[in-house]
Every structure is written in C-alpha cells, then in structure tokens.
Amino acid sequence: DTGVSQDPRHKITKRGQNVTFRCDPISEHNRLYWYRQTLGQGPEFLTYFQNEAQLEKSRLLSDRFSAERPKGSFSTLEIQRTEQGDSAMYLCASSYPQGAEAFFGQGTRLTVV
Amino acid sequence: GEDVEQSLFLSVREGDSSVINCTYTDSSSTYLYWYKQEPGAGLQLLTYIFSNMDMKQDQRLTVLLNKKDKHLSLRIADTQTGDSAIYFCAEKLTTGSARQLTFGSGTQLTVLP
Image 1 (cartoon, one colour):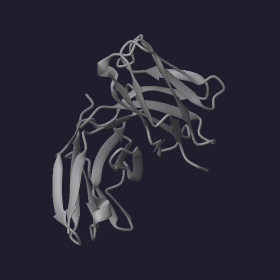
Image 2: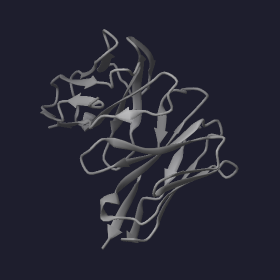
Image 3: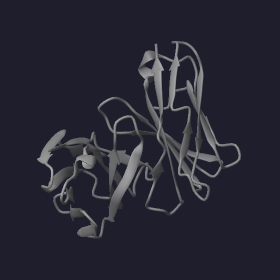
Image 4: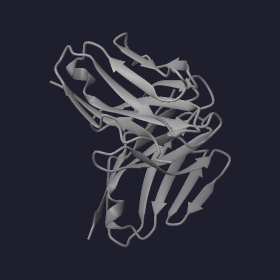
C-alpha cells in the first residue's frame, strides 16, 4: 500500500482560472477528507465523504469549491474562479469509518498569482 | 466551542527530552492526536490517545492526557535532529461536526546540535 496519494504536488495558476486536484486514498478506507492549510496554521476541515456520499461540508467550502468521489474511490476537489486567498496547501486524508487513525497525503500546494 | 492551542516554538538540544504541550476546550473529545509535519510535506500520524486513557507510550514518544485540565502533552525522549519539524495536536469530537479533526496551529520544534 502506497498510502494516500495526491496529484499534483504543486500548482500555480492565474487568478480567475479553475483548478482540480485529485486524491487517491488508502484502498480499504471508506472515509475521505479534504483539509486546507494556510501558512503558519493547522489544517482546517473542508469536507468529507463516506464511500461516494459527501456527508459534511464546512462553511469554508464556498460555492466556488466542489468535491466529488464518484465511485467511492478517488476524489477530486475543484476550485472555480480562483482567488489569491485560495493559495494554500490542500490536504487529503482517509480512514476506516470507525477508525481512530486518519492518514494524510503529501498535499497539493496551490499558488494563485 | 472547538479550540486547540499550542505554543508556537520549542528549542531543545540533541539528546535532551522535548515536551510539547496542547490545550483543548471541548470535553467531548474522543481521541487526541499528534501529527508531525516536515517542510513542504503532508502530516504524519505519530500517535493518538483515547480520551479514557491517561498515558500512552510508543518507543521514544509518551503522550500524557489530563482530562480535568484539558491538557495534552507529547514527550520525545532522546530528541534527534530528524525530529525537527512542526508538531500538531488535534482532537476528534463526539458532538456537532463530529467526524473531522480540529487542529492546533502547530509547535515548531528545533533541535540544536
């Protein structure tokens, strides 16, 4: 098992463009989480899925953000009309439904210029 | 409310013990975690403790939990230069938005030769 995988590792985009990130969780894990981490802060919860169902969304997840997990395996996070304030590290994590442990990927660092 | 606080910086000499402290406000926490983050990388789960435990030891790591004071600490014995990183405390709750982790802002540990 290679752990949680995220792609790309880095993304630089111009303000107003759309970007999409991918997360491949650990294969046996039903739960998948997205977090955002800005410089000097801890990660903040964005949303989570159990299988293909998106069960919870943070108020941080504005209308420009959308996340999917169509087959209950990998997930995508799309940001439309990016703004400079979207610049952050986007982290994905996965776990078993009743598991105490959540394992994180290496993150995608987004820079909006 | 959900609030996890940590001191920002800690410096220790190689070979000494490090103690990183964390306070949290929500008494309904079920699990409390310590994650390590190296520069530009994702979060590595170090250890976690269930809320009905007082202590957990795992090789060089010792976690102490004082539920009365809502205080969590991580002790690293025989600290090495490779332990230099940011350490995040996190809690998982049983109420409200119960399924994600709430993180502190992290403690930057610097190990001096």
